[in-house]
Amino acid sequence: MTRDELLLEVARLLLLSIDGRISDEQFAELETLLIDNPLARNYYLDLLLVTVGLNEPEGILSLKERERVSFGNIESSLWQALAEYEINAPAVAVEKSPKTPVEAEPAKRIEVVQRKRTVSKFSIYTFVFSAVATLCIIAMILFIPESSPVAVLTDGTGTEWAKTKRIPCMGESLERGTLKLSAGFVELAFNDGAVVVIEAPAVFDLKSNNAMFLQSGKLSAFVPKEAIGFSVQTLNATIVDYGTEFGVAIEDNGSVATHVFDGKVKVSSAKPDGIEKFSWLTKDEAVSVDNEGILSRKYLSHTRKFVTKVETAKGWHSYLDVNLIQNPGFEKDTAGTYYPDNPIDLQITNVDIRDWIDNGVATVYAYNAMPNPEFSRPDQEFPRPGHHPVPDNCGQNFFIGVDDDEIYQDINVSKLGYLIDGSGVSFTLSGWLGGYVDHKDGLLIIAVFRNDRDEEIGRSSIGPVDPMERNNKTGFVFRASSGDLPGSTESIRIVLRTKRDAGVADAYVDNLELRLSMK
Image 1 (tube, rainbow, N blue to C red):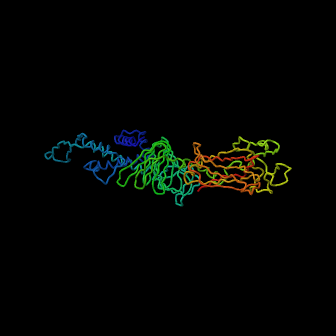
Image 2: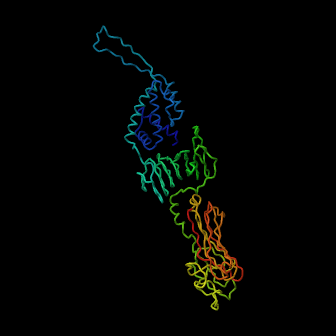
Image 3: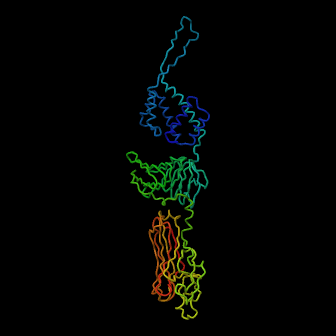
């Protein structure tokens, strides 16, 4: 229910209690509201303060005029209605019981005259209401625990908590209070249904079943319909949800950035003059609030700067500091055979290279196979370990281009999206490139960076290797390039592109690597 509906429901149930017409079901409903809903308790306590004013000689108007009393949860319309009711309420005639003095002499008996006085009907209600309010407070003290769980720690990865008296365990129900997350990510499921993922380093305070305070750090929230109204409070802004997915980040300069992934939120701030400023955000919109409470203009949200599921963060390590290229040394394939008497494009058996898109004549050859037994000079042979410069741990096979050709494979790095767009990810592309004596056949290794629309947003390459770099001898040389992945990189395409100069395209490559690391 909305805040207005909640206020009316609390008032309705209390009035039924005052009149003595509340049913067992309605009493249980009121009890549940007071136990489970902090806002309902706020409304209740505000109404209690109203009754205090009603008991004063000047009535409710005197309390309202006191600047030291604030009723933030009761709207001015309710004040006005209560005041008008007190002023305009019809008078109630209350008959006074006749008094007959005991043991009075008949001659001295005093004639008792029945008198009428007018009493505000609202004042009668005030007395009863105050009694009921007192009983309710006693019930709250007895039955509502001083600190009750508001959320559950449901998941986490790489988690380290600050060394305090309060170190949560996985699956633990969390009570109101402050928590400090030093490292990793945690997922909290609030009692009202909101699910929040918090990124370290972060300091946050659990306020209620549907609200929290973020002092520092970053979070993302998924809020189902039953949890609409979930709020994130910060020093400079308050974010209230209306059925959405959104992220909140406290920047290094103290400003608060709110990004909406789906749905709708209201971002509010209070400037030093106390005037509230707010902005409504919908899908793909974002806004920042600085230390002065000034809202920036709306800008495009950036979903990948937030971790929305802890599960995605658990897969990061499998992508970092390992070789992401599949079949990088071409050892999964059976090497082709050399046929010197065949046409150029058939001199080496074509092999369908595993893990690569290979639609041409490019193939795989073996180091230990002699291209022509009649050759006696090592410089007229294909590369062989012990005779030519070859890669360390070269294995059995290497790639040969044969003709103008291209093979490639795609590497999906979307699970690293948060790291790529957040703290940043660096790459190193390397490989051993080779050729035959002084032949100028070339090979280029290219890493093409693509976004989620499969558009190229950057590239890096190594090669080709000139014969002079090989001293005009058959063999391999090592080459590498490095840099930072462009923001929004979703996949990386590794391309091997060969260029034939004369005869067979004797452009070789082996032991390819693509490694990613956190900056």
